[in-house]
Length: 140
Image (tube, rainbow, N blue to C red; front, side, top):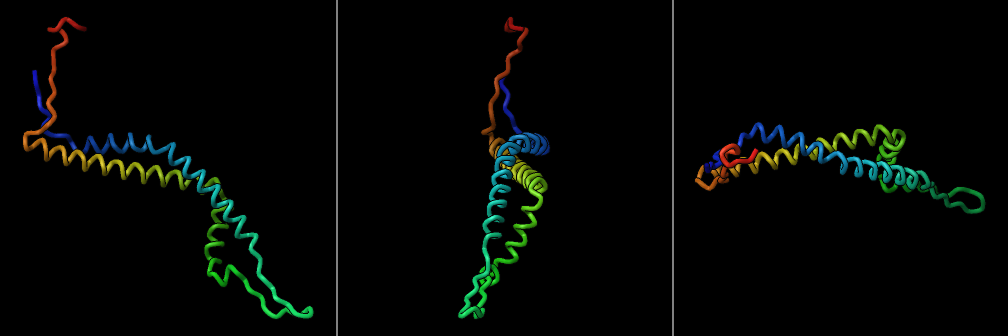
């Protein structure tokens, strides 16, 4: 018996796509979150080592230049310090955000592909499937 798949249900594609893509996104999200937390820790250490430059003449301070303020990096340094203080929360939040983003993007992609298939199948170019009765052919 030969059948043609005329339509793919978008809700089933969305459910299955969300589940499978969420599972597939876990390990890359864990790796990327770990890398990001490590980078935040290192950036925090580097920004913490930046000290103001003081120019003095004969023991008297003439000019004091704070590089973070001069380059307008103080808000960035404050935010990085907040993230670096709680690396586990940062890691967990980033992992969750990345898994959700990956699942949503992959699910949207799968649904768009199902819509495209439904349009192509409507024109008569659907997937042809040949089915055989297992009992008639002698196989179990």
